[in-house]
Image 1 (cartoon, rainbow, N blue to C red):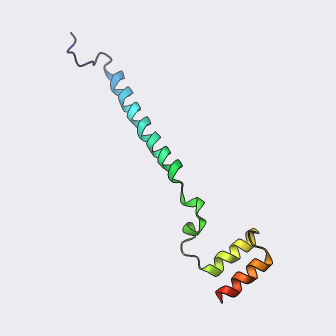
Image 2: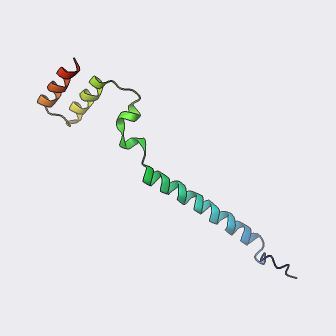
Length: 78
């Protein structure tokens, strides 16, 4: 006899409902991480307080600065 609550699927309905909400929560987490980004996009935040000299040394080592830019920045810091 049906009670009118729509529980005709029994345990399958409950499992389906749980899987649905897990998928919704996972989708929200994925969306927030995608839109919000991560600290990997901002390496200075990940470095944990590197000083200015270390930063320009690393940028020069990666080839982001040429010799003239590096020397000019180094002089500005002294």
